[in-house]
Structures are given as structure tokens and as C-alpha cells.
Length: 244
Image (tube, rainbow, N blue to C red; front, side):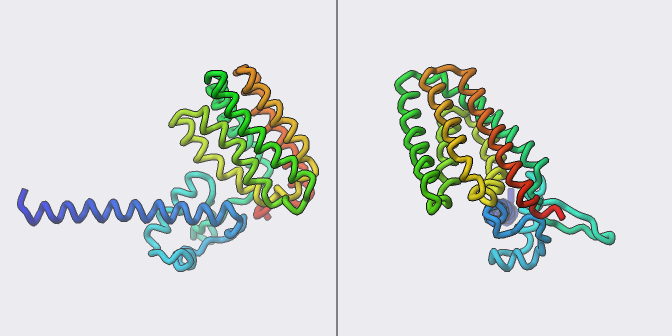
């Protein structure tokens, strides 16, 4: 291959790699804005404004939005022969599906965790009990309500990290942030029922200590299914967001 052609090819590959990195950065930044509610459910997305907000060019932002659309964070709507992107609304139907999926993914990870040696399971259980104790303190002190999500997430993430293989972990990483949207928006309204979730967590911990794979899976799925039921009541009270 001539030297000039070789340099041109390397430059092209470098440009593609750089573009891919930019798209990933844009994807993560936009997803973070959506998950944390800084791009509210139902908000119309103006590509140029978003690119300016992120201090990025429109090309990686456009590609990132298509990726976010594929994962359900963003929807495309047609208005007068034009297509526009909007932040996906938060609905009971969507929450029900998400919570069901995550419950099954974590249930499977829990089964794998149940196969670990007793000593390792005991260490995991100790970590989980510590996190559950933090939730118990939050239940008694509403001033700490802002920490509910982070502590609860660590509880479930500990189980997934210890039990899931690489494929299952990637699947969980793809779907879990979408449940985070609901948690961050509605969590402070669920604090009155936090003691119920804490009790469900204790069942999960006991099952892990017993090494009972079926019990671990059932307990995790139950926690997510009941979590949706609690969320559903709050959504009925405050309404779905962005679906008007």
C-alpha cells in the first residue's frame, strides 16, 4: 500500500474512533440528563440546543439520540410531516414492564449468587444488612429521604455484581437506569412504605445465607413486583409524567 494511502486510511480510522467516542460521551450525558429529570418526561428535544448545552457538535448528539431512542429513553413523534424527538414519558404501563424485566434479571443473578461458597455468601449478606440498616434509618428520619435511591440501588447492585456474568451484567446495566427515572421522581413519595421494602430485603438476605436459589429468585422478583405496586399507587396519586 502506498504511504499516502496508508496515512489516509489511518486518519480515517482515527476519525471513526474519535466519532464513536464522542457518540458514547453524548449518549451517557444525555441519558444522565433524562434519568435525573433534568430533561423532563415529555420534553421536546431541540438538537441544536442540546448540542450547545453539552458543548458538542450536532453530529454525535444526533447519533446518540438514535441510540437513546432504541433503548426507550427517547421517542420519535411525527408532527405535520416532520419528525421530532421527545423524552419518553413515565407511565404505569412502562413501569410495569421495566420492573418485571429487572426483577427477572436480578432473580437470575441471585440464583448464581446462591451457588457461591457459604463464606462468600455470608460476606455479601453482611454488606446487604449494612445497607438495609441505612434504609431503616431513612425510614425513621424523613430528612434523609434524598438518599433512598442511592442506598437501595447499592443493595441491588451488590447482588447483581456478585451473581451476574458479563452478559447478564450488560443487560442489567442497559435496563436499570430506566427504572432509575421512576425512582428519582417518585422515591420521596414512597417513604411511608419503606419499611415494607426493608422487610422484603431481609427475606432476600435470609435466602442468600441459606443458599436457596429458588428462594433468592422469588424474593428478588417479589421485591420488584411489590415495588411496582407501591409505585403504581403513587403514580395514580400524582399522575403520569409527560404523557399528556
